[in-house]
Length: 161
Image (cartoon, rainbow, N blue to C red; front, side):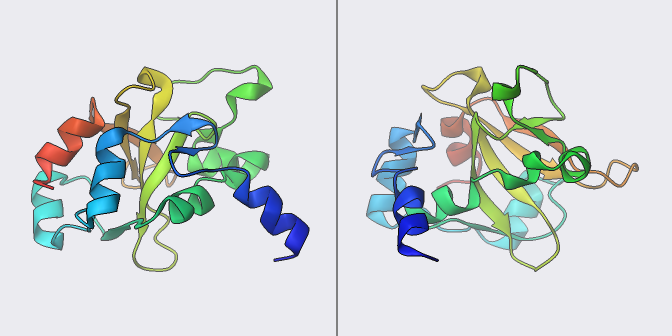
């Protein structure tokens, strides 16, 4: 990565925000204390049965920023495949679409090519965003984003973090 590109990328986040979205205080506390760790795969399957393949939690603000760039929404074909869009284009879409400008990925697929994610969705507000998972098992061979919990705090409680 060129120095100029690296500097521009670093401006996208600071210690408490990514893409101008505030990270939940609880997430920052979990990251700082080292308790933000991927739960056991069996627990994940039991608590989130529609997540059919393993994911890994992103372990730093930098990794969250890197994975949350939202470039898939910039190409019409991939945007349709992944159900991702940018609300700054003047279009608002609801689930199963993910607004890449109002969400942040906090976990991604463990296996290359699985294209899975767990995201904070700030369309519900910035205080305690809802949590979405990607779902490729809908039958139409596209990714549909589904709400798994109404708040991040509820997600943390569900997974006993």
